[in-house]
Length: 265
Image (cartoon, rainbow, N blue to C red):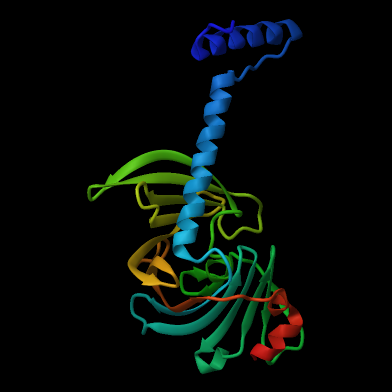
C-alpha cells in the first residue's frame, strides 16, 4: 500500500470501514475524508471569527467610550454615553456616564454572570445578556462584544457585495446564556473586516441587523468605529453606536469584582 496514491488509500480505507460497520450492525457511516473536510471547515470558520473579533477590539485589556443614539418614528432621539473596561471575552465593566438620571449604574460581566449595580440599591440585580440596555442594544452587545467563545461557527456560503467577496457564517449559541440564539455574519474574505450581522431569536425570527462602518485607525489597529443596529421588529427603529478613545490597557483581575465597583460610582 505504500505505493498507492493518498486518494486511493482513502477509498480503500472507506471500503474497509464500511465492511466492518455492516458486519457490526451499525447503520450510519461517515466517510473518513468527509470527516476530515468537516474538521477543516470548522477550523477555517473559527479562524475567520477570531480574526474579525481582533479587528473589532484588541485581544487584551482595553478601555473605550461608546455613545449610543436611539431613534424611532415620532420620537426624539435618546442619547446615552458609556465607558467600557474589558479583558478577554468574559470580563467587562460597563459604566453609565449619561444621562444624569442613570449616571453611576454599572454592569459587571464575569464569565456567564451579568450583574447590574445601582447607587440607590444595596444589592446587585442579576440580568440576562439578551435583555435590552437601550434601544436596539442588548446588555451583551456591550458587555460581551466578541463572538468567539460564545458561538459555534460554520461557513454556509460566499457572497459578493459591491465587488468584495464575503464569508457568510452561521453562528450558533453554545448555551442559553449567550445574547442571541443564532447569528448570520458577513466577514470580508481578504481583509477579515466584519461587514454586517443578523441576529435571530430562538423562534427563528430576525431581531435586528448590525452594520459595521466608519473603519479608522484606533486602539492600535483599523477598526469599525460606528455600528448601526436596525430593528427588524419596529419600523424606523435604529441605534447608532459610536466608539471613541479606544486604548489598550493592562487591567488587573481585581477590577472585575464587586468590591471594585464601589469605586466606580
